[in-house]
Amino acid sequence: MDMISIAFLFIGQSPRPDVMDEMRRALPGFSIREYGALDGLDAAAVEAAFSPSNPADMLITRLKDGSSAAVSEKKLALRLQMKLGEAAKDGVDAAVLMCTGSFPGLSCPMPLFTMDEVFHRKLSLPRGTKHIGLIVPEEPQRRLFTGKYSHFGLPVTSAAASPYEDTAKVIKAACALRAAGADCIVLDCMGYSIALAENVAAAAGIPVLTPRQETAAAIIRLTEK
Image 1 (cartoon, rainbow, N blue to C red):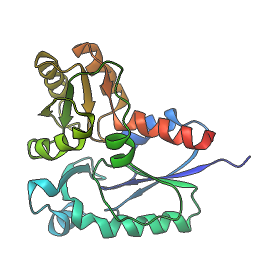
Image 2 (cartoon, one colour):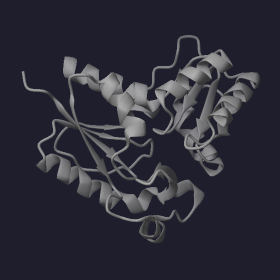
Image 3 (cartoon, one colour):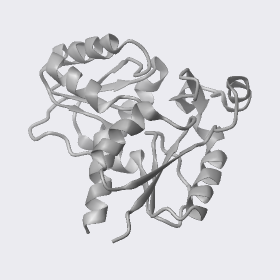
């Protein structure tokens, strides 16, 4: 049986060893290719062409030099579509959009995993969850991303702590959410690692969910059908 090839598409730049080292461990036996919507651009070009016009349009990503950047979800759509076309020409079997933004309207001839679908709509909360604690990278994202969990019909308390800065801030935010009544923590950005989630869970004493874990599980489920 031929090895299944998966395209991992980032809204920033590739390669992303900080993310993909974990994903490769979670997906042994798969051929993995990386694509970045902003590949080939320097930081000045990214800021000039893709800066968000308002907080509701903002996403946080990482550039090739390791710096983080705020980018516009709307302005990235065309670049993401272009990269999906490249992946299709490369003959991959499926693609994964490595961002929890929505990006409606993307066209893809192979199965496309989006975090809006995998993480926001189909997330399996731990049994008995009564109060969701949500952590997002930046303060302006709290209100927008809180709404993505309204279909659970549960209270959602949010906090902001970037995955690209001091991890102690993420742990502190999680513990504060636990003190506010949360019995489950959701880390809503691909930048939050599985290792960080484990550290947060140990510190806060409650389950922690990340898009990376859910993405790997979704890919494995598809290939087992």
